[in-house]
Length: 344
Image (cartoon, rainbow, N blue to C red; front, side):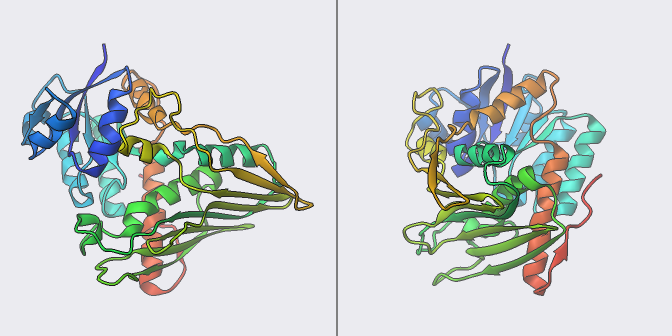
């Protein structure tokens, strides 16, 4: 029997990512949504149970898993309430506003023996999977420089919580966890973090530009996000002792979900943008891209509910929070920062 899931929040993340991906996993059943706008939910999900109060869901013994897809400043209190109710838990990134809050959530879940995972879906971007495979296969030798960009052209500040001042808003809180998680998957924890955050657009009220450098002994990892990049920039640039990898264009899965394409579609996760390997002589070689596979996240959650280890563990999520926080502190002080202790 599939595990019953309640989705808390039906904004951009809940509607675009979580609801369709949960529904695509045979081991899970989307049984309820918590939202103040039932008409919005029913427009996409006719007949879906909609509750206005999370307490009703947490008191329901038939709900096995709670997925929190609400604004960042609500993650911690909702997570603690779900853990107290004995529910397995998925939290959209970031886990919390601060590393201290995230540690408290992870400790609480550990004490109660509750499954806790964070939605780091960008591990299953097709271009990232291909880059990771190429590095593992040694196609460019020893990596010395890794550059990862989430750049967009959005010159007009939009009326949404992510772009208003306050805890958990801004481009670094939004995209930083994705960029950091991918880097940590490849290279582990850095020695130090240097960062600059900027508010560059007319009318911007929070950071809309982020440039972060992770320092390793023989590697520099550059993470960048900007909102004034017309025409785009390379998504990945990787230089090694025997060549380079260059990738333009974003993974298509978010766009597919936005347009109503679902993971059962034959072209799911396939991208036309090329990945190119430049060898030591400068000759360009196209590399076939692996298909993106966001459904693997919830397949892993279904397996974890049946006793397997989660693919995104609490410790990994705390490591992401530690690096994100170190970057924010570096931007505040203008000084390089070590990664703060994060293990429980």
